[in-house]
Length: 294
Image 1: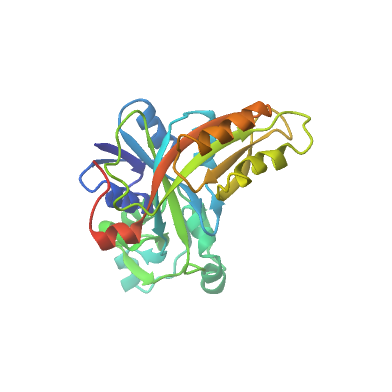
Image 2: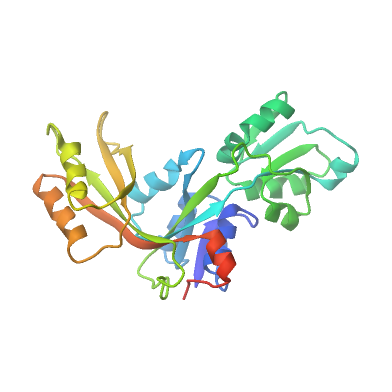
């Protein structure tokens, strides 16, 4: 199986990829859209991209590209604990150089706000496409005192020295990644090692319908379906036009999920199921030392 992920080597996305597909051919891409396009154009079988972070919330680039550009089905998710490290080139560390610039992914920099404000408030920060790309860049700039925020895997891969460990603001920080596929059987017997199941709905409300959202939520409530996430995003068709993404803590069945869809469509809502899939956790897969992949 060929798996596209947000690269380069050493990103949290690669950690997720290794956990789910340890025997796969991993193909790093520079951007999230490029990862998704890789599957749509059949250069890879599966894409793994970040969709939600504990601290920063949803990764809107992933959601918007998936909805508006490449509508690929969600076939799974994996949640990874996020531990951010502050690293520099070892030559700069030996010279006791203070960084003149700190680079990383925007979410990583935001996740370390308290540390950066306290220790490096006078140092400029710049954004990169991924934490791995930031580490890779620092590795090539041995004559400049630049620091990167990334994980320990990136420090190991690119030969950087970790100057400060675990600089993230919150210890319970996690990122959830979605697995996108295009007609490929992805997981075998996921009931053995899954954490839970989810079904994701995309719902657009009928125009000029008072109480429409209330009726939408009621369709789930009276069936006792638990909703773990409700989010609105613009349809990009005009101001005030939004669609809703709703995660239900249940695998699609023959009764309840189709019943919800039929009821909402009878109300005039646009309804699409983006996926019904198993959810995995990084710790669980590592503890059991098994892979859910084919």
